[in-house]
Amino acid sequence: RKADIALYEAKAAGRGRYVFFAEQMDASIRHRREIERDLRAAIAAGDEMHVVYQPLYSAQSGRITGAEALVRWQHPHKGLMSPSTFIPVAESTGLIEPLGEWVLEEACRAAVALPLNSISVNVSAVQLRNEKFAERVIAVLERTGLKPSRLELEITETSFIESVANCQPNLAALRARGVKIALDDFGTGYSSFTHLRYFDVDRIKIDQSFVNGIDAEAGGSAIIQAIVDLAKASGMQVTAEGVETAEQSTFLTEAGCNSLQGYLLSRPIGVGELAAMCTKTAVGT
Ligand code: C2E
Ligand code: MG
Ligand code: MG
Ligand code: MG
Image (cartoon, rainbow, N blue to C red):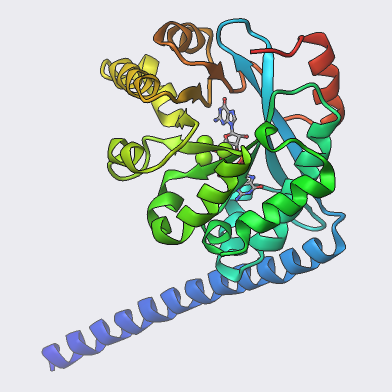
């Protein structure tokens, strides 16, 4: 009898947990579907999305050299949504292709009118895998009149690994036109250093987790120095992202980084504010 009761209780508890999990899963699937539906509508209508720009500063001169385009979504009910929430949904639904192309065109159009050396645009592995990707980018450059060498595409290391075979022809075609390629979030992927041997990139962007580590861990600064030395020995430019303190800025400059990006220098800003900053801080390398 006791054993029967125990068994009954276990089953009930198990079922309870199952129901709980099922409800949670249901809620998260519903949430994703909602985002997908709203995202589709927002991309079609085009009035809820906008692009902000975060400047890159020369470590040597402190002048603005370029800016990175970052997409923002002003959701009618949910408020300002972070790309880390909706980019994964855009990727899994294919919506990243029209969204990414829209961001690219906005950024190129803005850059044509600004005295920046380069404009950086983030690109997802899903876009890179499409055999028409390079063609589409070149079409945007032609439509907007931006010189290809002023465009830099940022690709995360994980994207590279996921789509090595399919992305190579796209990257080769773009580089042949003069478009620059940067490896974003460098150091967060699996065996980062190995990849540098296989991919032709113009720049690496040291992930902000390493930059944060400068003050925290004793080994943090040694890792950064090793990354900078290796990148420079391979003829690549180095940008440090997520620079928040003066100490970090000093260390990164002394370590030999070419450019710095982070809240210490500027948060992502609107295109009007960027234009004003460009005239204040003479642009150069
Ligand atoms: P990311 O390309 O590595 O961009 C850097 C992120 O760090 C941005 O977040 C930026 O606002 C933030 N950041 C900049 N400086 C600092 C700092 O000093 N401290 C801290 N804590 N954060 C800083 P955001 O704009 O939320 O974007 C997150 C990620 O979403 C980006 O990482 C990028 O991977 C992705 N993303 C943004 N826009 C696009 C896009 O148009 N297309 C694609 N495919 N991905 C995008
Ligand atoms: Mg980036
Ligand atoms: Mg990054
Ligand atoms: Mg990132």
